[in-house]
Length: 97
Image (cartoon, rainbow, N blue to C red):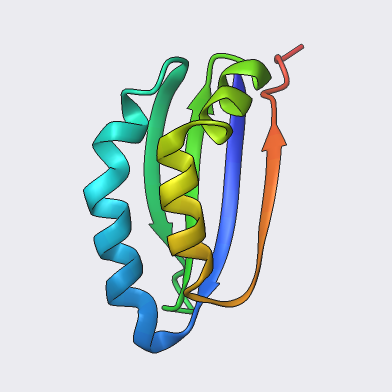
């Protein structure tokens, strides 16, 4: 399993537009092949900073989503609202000893 975190900083006036984009697309993202989990976090101290937290069956599943028509619509619309470039990274859980 691959865990993907994307941290996004928005212009204050664009937060409602971002939330609208997320809410209108989250169920479709969750239905993408290989998507196991998706939630949205808001920074406790910086209200214009949000993170998406998603789980994917594999890197290939994530990349397939990133090549999808849905991503091609959602990401450019979201990116246009940024106050700073997004920070994205993928991690894997480390098994306990």
